[in-house]
Length: 538
Image (cartoon, rainbow, N blue to C red):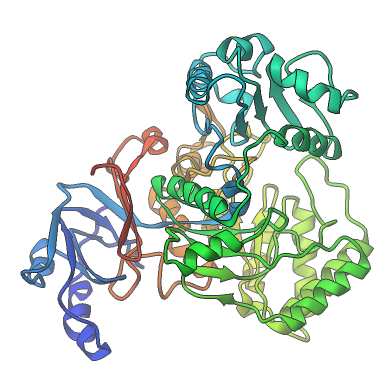
């Protein structure tokens, strides 16, 4: 969809910026581009002018180049597509930083042989005896050449001198002989003689702890800062410039904060308040904490924001069971949510079953009699099985919705799950995220491909033609809508004058390529606040 360029984008800088005290002379101009501004009209422009951290103007090549001075750097993008920096509204960010500098990723790899080749290459890189870790973000179905789990024999062949530990979920793991020989004595009741161990959640933690004894975690603040930077480098390489961490027990934020203080944080990182409540007593303690602490302890690049994704730890549903939670559990949730409303806190809550989402909405409606919640932008996450009636009720109550990546999850029989087209058509504010790191790939183009092509890896149809969304709608959900959900719509989410220069230059035309190529899009450059943080060209 190509729309006419609006002259107002240009005149904003000419008329308004001098009154606001901004310079009219850009440091950098990108021109001859296809700039998807993702503004209210989804305007497509040709050029963009940037000064310092912010965008000065967006418009035609002639309009923008007229603003240049002798000091302005000009970059001809030769028709490349530019989009706003992508925002992940639901990622387990700190968990990702713990592993980023050492793990091997197989996100979106649809060749089993390619995975085995990567394991062999990692073994050569590390040398004999060092552990090779693949920690989630994949599924046995994703290999077009040979679907299924890894056998002991093929892992032994790929890395005969290195223990190989592959996490599939929090309950399922694959190992070669060397890894089994180390792990089995520590969890003998789980070992079944094959390459795979399948457990319940509690036993799964035992397996993970046993394996991670061999993981080379950074121990000093400086080492952890290196790990954080490695994760940010990967996020920048796939176009992510903002991340909201919904985790809670994944370590210390000290290294992230240290990078922020040194102005070396290449991703805007916001995180949920860190507490754990799993009893009426601890729910009261959490509520008291929300009264003592101020919400929105963040700047434009870093800080604490909101609570969730599990406001109350025992209120954690799945798609596998619709067994209702007790009223005692919902009462504890209400205790915390009431304190959140009273003190102005944002909530992002996990709700896969329709009944869970509906009960949360009922509680928020009760709370609103004392403390209105409509302007707090509370959010339902996942919503795999949500009904249209519940979506409409959420919209009426001022709630939003976030959808995660499901490219490793097959179709739920007889229905679209999550029902993305219905959610889009409802008019509710909603956005896309990943739910990375373990249960999903956190490459945003994989997520966009899923909901626009209607497929999961390797090339399996999941949605009917009338159940998917357009590329424009998906891009809005990963940028402008997410900015609004995170209360940052004045600063990020679109490429408009006055906003931060968070942008991504793509290697192909997002709007015109075949939809099945969307998952293969590679950023050529990522910029955050006017600074190039990823450059695949130079």
